[in-house]
Length: 391
Image (cartoon, rainbow, N blue to C red; front, side, top):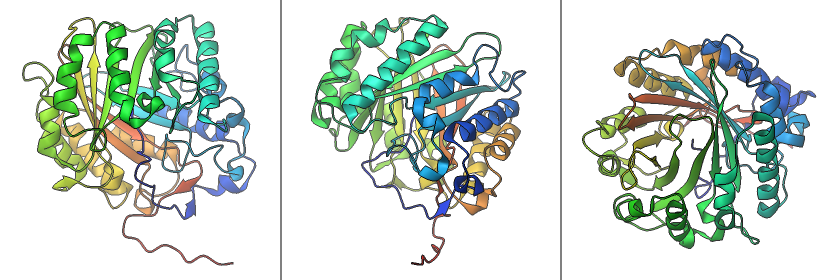
């Protein structure tokens, strides 16, 4: 999970997402309909709630924002999506397995300050934990690190739900390593890893994933698995500014053995072989489990396809190509696109935000495709002329 990097200003969007934006349709209704559609696209038997995961969980996480009309605009400049939609969807593909669905939300998106964003996020997380009977102790263990009295932006807490057809959802929480300032992010993550028993992993992570310092290798997120996971993970996300596919592949070699595969080839396919990723950066995710206290058990590269494709038609074709290469069904992406919007893919860019490759020492490869709700605006195709404004 990853989303836009606010260090690079988002290109201005000039077209409203749909006719719904001019009506009283609320954010909750908009994303609720999309959630049902994406679940149907993935083949879920219960598209409204995916078994034990009712749509109400998403609406409760959003709180007052769910009742806000789209015409009123985004509740805050959320870091989740380019148009500041505080929700993101994704599909998880594994060869020979059912397609998974994930939905991410920013519970504190109505907050006026980062400190309040954190308080609202923690309150919403505790309410979800009470309803779904899981512990938030891992978050409380590092609360002082990520929720200081004087917090820095651009976000405080996100919560994601992995929807599963046969069992309760897996909950993931993302917190901000830069809460004490970007220059202290490494210090914060080192301490957080130590508290979870992964202190020995920090040296290699620092030397190989962040060798150029916080301006070039920016630690973006620290994430925790909560609830019912077979093997819970602690994850660190690093954005690599101005790099090549070969550079990203070098980071993937932190994964023991030859498990990472050809990460460089994946980056080139999704990014359209840009040479250098000079716009929005690719993001590495290093995940740690009890299987190995010193080395990552998983590596994911997230490629921001929307910044390296003319439109969503091109982004769709690249996602389909990597899915087919890995023996996965690309038709689900087309069904999801149809469920997300009525617009043609060539009419905008950003609906497909990221495509990621997940490699693990103990699980088969996975490809994830991330979607923006486009609740408020649609970015025009790259290079297209913007309509003239009047007034």
